[in-house]
Image 1 (cartoon, rainbow, N blue to C red):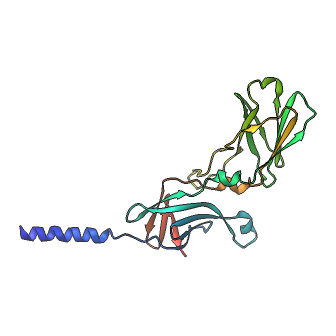
Image 2 (cartoon, rainbow, N blue to C red):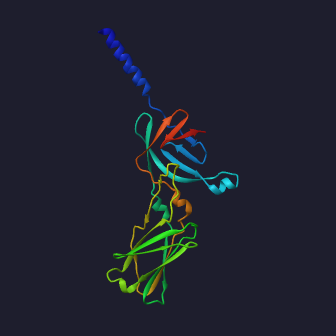
Image 3 (tube, one colour):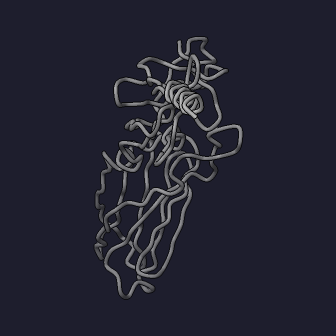
Length: 232
């Protein structure tokens, strides 16, 4: 019986030794192609992607996809959560102005996205009525019929790309599907409205928004969603 007890304690000791916490080391990690990087510094993790234009020029440059807070979850797994939502940067420098209108039958709402080349769809809600438009060369104008607007003197709007580029080879998308402006915009009976959004760029829609994700520490690197990132 004493012999069996000693064996039992030995097994516990081996299991405990095998569960020694692994350290998530500071540094830069790259995936197999080198197109994506993970940078870790203390309790912050950054996802970075290689700019396609820089590849063509022969000198790689990277832009951020997400900045996350790290929390230890177990001996080998660490939870990561986005620190900032992409909407915060998208609407940061928004400029809303009014212009005199000669059209008494309709309101005109113009959206300008000078730093985006892809087509972007804007939805405008005025009361229960939905209007929509798609940018061409960075601009679109949505016309609201004054005769149909009876109960609202303001509107809300959102935008999204006309198409999404998958975030990984499995076809998953880790970004925000739709960006909703958090405030109502007042309508003036004699004015048209121009909304300029300089922070909307093509790379905005590449950005991740991550909640409750996990990275795993493995030999010589880390894994996220099944993809291996090797430490430089």
